[in-house]
Length: 183
Image 1 (tube, one colour):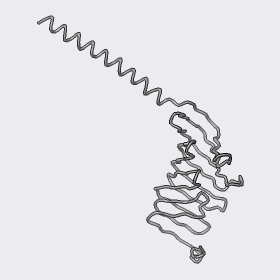
Image 2 (image 1 turned 180 degrees about the horizontal axis):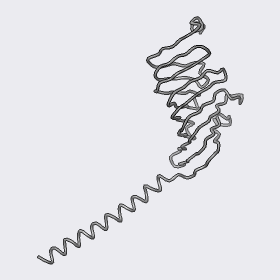
Image 3 (image 1 turned 90 degrees about the horizontal axis):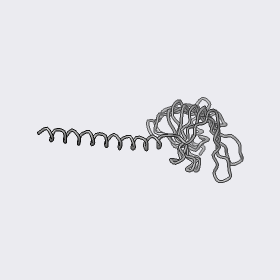
Image 4 (image 1 turned 120 degrees about the vertical axis):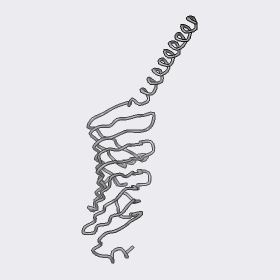
C-alpha cells in the first residue's frame, strides 16, 4: 500500500512538472508572436500606390508587427494626397491600425476628417482604403459643409467627401435644397 501511494505521488509530480514545462514553452511561443518588430516614437509613414504618394501618416508612436502586416499607431495625423500631389484631406484620430501591403487604415476614437473645401466629418471609427480612395464606417457620423449639417449611421464616401452616402437614420439641415438636385 505504501509503495502504491509513493508511485501515485511520483506520477503526479512527474506529470505536473511535465505540464509546467509544456506550458512555459507555449507561453514563450505566444510571447514571441505578441512582441512587435519595432516601436518608433514621433515618426511618419508614407503610403504609395505603385509610385504615387497617397498619404503621409504622422503618429506619436508606431508599433509594427511585420509578420501580420500590421502597424498600430497612436495620436494619428494623416494627410491624403490626390494624383497631383496636393493634400486634399486631413484626418486625425486617437489610434489606428495600418495594413501597408493592403493599403488599408482603420482609425479609432475622436476621428475628424477635413477636406480642402472645409467639409468636416466627425465619427468614432472609420476605415480608409487607399486603393479605392474611399472611407467607410458603421458608426454615427456628423458632416458639416458650410451651414449644412447631415447626421446618420454608417457612411460610404470618397475621401474628399464630395460624393457620400449615409447608410441609415439620416437627418440634417440643408440651407439650399436645390443644390441637391444639381447632380
